[in-house]
Amino acid sequence: MPKENVNKAQIMKTIMPVIEKAAEFDGLLPVETDFVQEAGQWTLKVFLYNPATPITHADCENITKKIESVLEELIPVQFRLEVSSPGTERKLKSDKEYGIFKGERVKVKLKKSAQTEPRTFLAKIKDYKESDGLLLETLDPPEEIKIKNEDISSVKLEPEYEFNKKKK
Image (cartoon, rainbow, N blue to C red; front, side, top):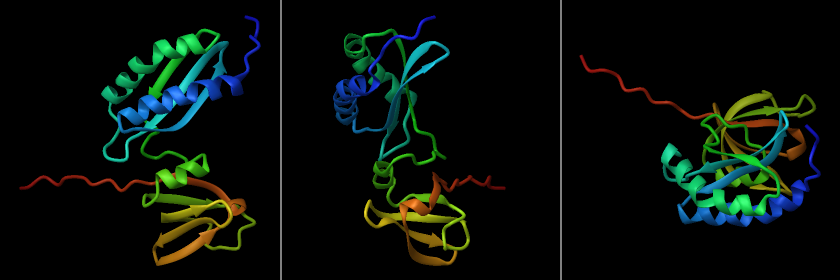
């Protein structure tokens, strides 16, 4: 199958307002959107976040119904649309996500060149500024620290799960 000449940057620029408006109308945030070619087929992946409640199948279905026909007119190739939750243990991939997940518990992994020890630890995101880096509050011991972007290897959501104990 020949590769189509597709301007991904132009497509993303054209479709993002449609996706953002539909998500915003339902109180959702598009955390990540990607247009990729896998096994010869184009796929538009939209990951949604709801700051109030977990994303449901109904949320994904509603957004799909709202945007699918419009996107088919805007995207010049056949594609598959995938709308989903970013996942509870998502690796944060952009500066924008530090703001979206402010206050959330994360697992931080630092590069070997970082001067901070330990290199992997749990913390809560307090703030993010591109010029200063990520402001965190470590959990054990509780301490406020600032990590520069160049020292970060990865930041991943690390939710606390509560399990109901059966009463005897």
